Each structure stands twice: as C-alpha cells, then as structure tokens.
Image 1 (cartoon, rainbow over the protein chains, first blue to last red):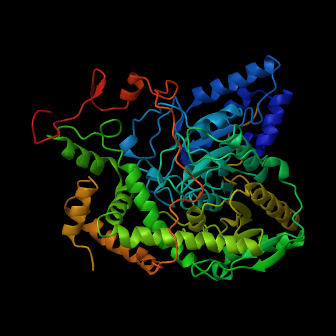
Image 2 (tube, rainbow over the protein chains, first blue to last red):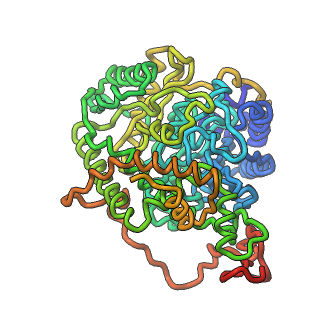
Image 3 (tube, rainbow over the protein chains, first blue to last red):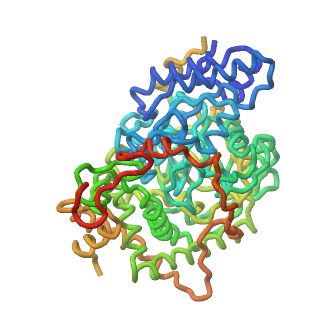
Length: 503
Length: 102
C-alpha cells in the first residue's frame, strides 16, 4: 500500500472513485501523517479530525449510493487561517482573533469542500498576512520542512509547509504581495496567485482589498490546476462584487504545446542585486527547458518596476489600515477589560490584540492616509500603478508569458531578516503583479547547488490568461523532469513516508 | 522632515492604537524608515497619468434590492457569539462619552 504523500490529488480522487481505498482511509492516513510530522513542522494552528472524517464519510456514503463523485473526492486539504470555515476558529494567527469562531464558510473553502476535499485543519500564517516568513504569527513559528531552522516563507507559510511535508495534498493560501508564490518557492511546492477577481474573496479576512487573491498550493502543476477548477466551478460569486466568471477548465489545457510561444525574460531582474546565483541558475534552467520545447526567449523591460515596492507599501498599508479598523473589540476580537469609555477600550484592545507588525502596517497606513499626506503619497502610488499596468501590457505585446525568480534567495534562517523594511525588499519579484492584477505561479526546480534548499522560478501571465499560465508551468515541470531525471517537487526528505500509510 | 514621537503619538490616536514608552519610540524609528522607503513614489506625479485605484478597470457599483437577505444575514445569536460583551439582543460597550458607568 502507498503512503498518502506519494499520491497526487488526481490519484487520490481516482483511487477513491475506483474503490481502491475509501475516503475514510485517506482521512485517517492524512491525520496520521499530521500526527507524525506536525510536531516538528508546526504548520497547523488547528487540526480538525472530526471535520476531516465527516467529509470523508459523506464521500464514502455518496459512493455507496452509486453517485458520481466530485472531482477532488477524498483529497486532504489545509486552509490558511484567514479563511472562514464553520466548525473552526479563524484567528489570522492573531491574539485579536484567538477565540473567533467562523460564523460562516468562505466561498473558496466551500467550493473545495463541494469538490470533495477533506478539511484537515487551519494553517499558520503571518499575523493578518503581514510578513514574508510566518514569524509574525502570534502563536508559534512554522518550520521549513527542508530545514527546521529556516523559515517557510510567508505569509501563507503554514499552507506551503503542510504540502511540502506531505501532511496534505492541497492547501489554500492568499497572496497580497507574494504570500503564495514566495513560500511555495521557499518550501519547494507549486503555488499560484490567479488573476485578481478569479477566486472569490468572500469570507477571507481582508488585508488589501485591491491586492488580495486566493490561490492553491500543491506538489504538481496538475493538482494546482484541478484546485483552480474547483475554486472557479460555479462561476462568479454573487457575494464578492469583484469576482468574475472564469469558466475555463484549467486542467484540460495543461499538456498544450508551447512551441513558437514567446517567453519574456527581464534582464534587470536577472541581474538584480541580492539575487543568489543558485536561484538565478534555476530560472535559467527553466528558460532552457522551455526553449527545448520550442519556445522563443525574448528580452522585455518593465521600466517602472522600481516604483513597485514603494507603490505597494503605500497602497497595501493604506488598505490594511482601512480594513483592520473593524477590529474595535466590540463585535468580535480581543476586548480590554475595565476601560472607563469606548475610545479607551478601542485603543487598548487594539494595542494589546495586534502584534508588532500588524501595528506597524496600520500605523504606516494611518500616516499615509492622514490629511496633507494622503494627496502626496496615495495618489502618486495609484499613478505608478497605471504605469506598471501599462508596462505589463507592453511586455505582453512581445511575450506570451514572463519568466522570473519568485524569491531572490532560498529560505533564510529565523531572525535573519529582523529589520522590517529589509524584509519588505524581499518581495521585489512578486509584488508588481498584485499591483497590476495579473496571475503568477511558482514552479519548484529541485534544490540549489549551494544551499541544498528548494529553488524555483516564477511565471507571470496576462490578466485572465491563467489557463495558459498553467500550460507554461506544466511545460517547465515536464522539461525539468526530462532534463534532470528528477521531479522538481518532492516531499521534504525528512518527512517523506513518516506516518500516513494508506492501510 | 523626520516624524517626531509627538507626530507618531498623534498618528496612533488617529489609528486608535494606544502606544506608549518604548513601543512609541520603536514605532517612530520604523515609520521614518518606512516613509523613506516609499519616498520614490513622490516622483510619480505626472499630470497626464490617470490613477488606477483597482486592478479591474471595468468595475461598476453593484446594487441589491433594499430587502433583508435572510440567507446571508446571521441569526442574532450567531452575530453576538463572538462578542466579548453582549446583553439581550445587543453588543455591550462602556460609556461613549466621558468616563462614566461601564
């Protein structure tokens, strides 16, 4: 019999449908893997065996009744803890929401459940998604499964680590400035930020409403494409006015031919200060394997990208300050006892409920939106945004997809980036598509020659061209395997086969 | 011009986050670093560039019927269940003006 971490989502769903094993057996194997592995990884803030087994029992009952099973029947799923799921707390890894019980289920989570996924638990994250290392979680750190002394990246660090350690097959994260693609790169898994509007944000605790987008993690491009199919099944969500209809089948186009297509390389990115040579080599290898499959490499420039980090750290904190104003300790969240009036209760509840980085971002946003400052910074940032959108539009006249790093380095050690503004600069390669809105995907490419840690490349597509983006991602995955004889993604060696036997 | 601790205290008041002592000091240093980091944005003031407030340019406002959505509206018990203090059908707060009775 197999171990749960050896199987793809497609194989699990097929095995359950064929009766090779039951969804309940899959659920028990996943819970066993979590039991054996999560003590070291600490990917989960909450594990929910009763929800996992209930969902599995529903799948098994449907099969017994002769029903056609949904496409991801029996696939173990982790959900970032900023997504509501009835029966769980949604804490955003913050003291502010430590006891907050989800009053409803987010659309993205519901759609994964409707597709037959088994919810295993809620994944750790940077507090309210503010961070690139998951170190700002108020509860505990999550360790990179490839080296427990290193960060998993962030903010969706728990979601990436749970997949990398083989505890679950799929997970959901959210990406405001790279929070899916950077941890995917650092943990060596596939992670996708779809085009803004593709996945509903209803029921996901908001950080930057014009930047946030939900997306999946998996160990293969096909698994991520199948998760995208599940997230978009049912079309536009009436409950999120910014969601759009994406009826495409993402998984169906994966093996498409890329011969004759143009892959854009941005020379200034490849020579960016801080980009390590092993990450650069990985991106060059990805370019090479695309070329081998008939793609043409072209050089493109994104001249206004130097404004991206500055624009992001105006727009992001401004939107975060506005969104997090709702946490006043009255309707939900931490409430400081014994305050003589409401203003004091609000200010003290927020001071105690929020951690350091959450306070920093809100203070920056408050300053940038204050009278006299707002006109100078906020308006300029939105103009820079126009220029960045135009840059991408011009780049896509010359190229069908862009290839670049996701993170400038492999996973760093805990505490290594202790200066918050230095940490912000590590978002260089991921941030601009949150500003422009188009989609991006991280494709793992084995381990780096110097660090032995996972390395990856990022592909960035046109807006609402995520199906083609996945085709290119699959081409990189396929080409890497053909060239090196090894899969670009594998379960972190210390955890592979540790618990989780599908008996 | 660098932000002073008094400036940051005023921002904290505006943000409704009670900051004092060492925390206020650290926040002042952080805000000055962060504002310096976003400074390059001040070069983007060209008159002929329209601002983009949202990545989906064609968005328009969505109106719904002015009627209670009984499917989406939380039952009162559920709406109150995450509140630290409630009474009957309401959230409970301390005095809004002054330091009166809690």
